[in-house]
Image (tube, rainbow, N blue to C red; front, side):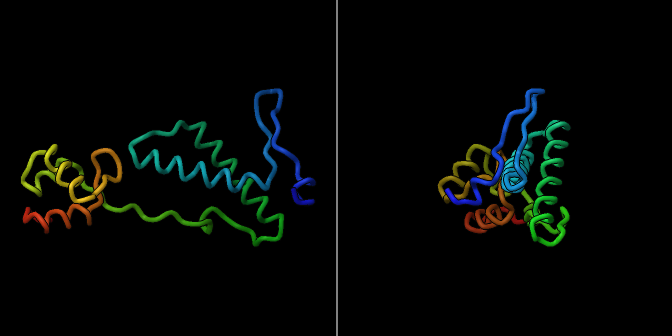
Length: 139
């Protein structure tokens, strides 16, 4: 353990039903939760409003800690940007382009080593490559 670690307060439970997180933990926890929530939303999941609010509080604490400890003042917009969403193709659309059933389209993709981005959603470029190899209908 480093000397600086011994000086940092530990996370602790608050009797009223909350938790205390030291500022140095807010940023890595916020990033991890933000990425997990974004993944769930891409997969069609929903996030409860109170979870979104808690994540916003965690983000604010992370940015305040970074600013207070020698980093330039930061805002949400200059934090590491997420990649823009890639246009996705449904399994039904992929099957139409390949002129096969949805089940057979999934088999073709699997045989070619193409994996879905999420359940029944495929990367547009992967589908275009499959269609080009199989001689289906391009779009």
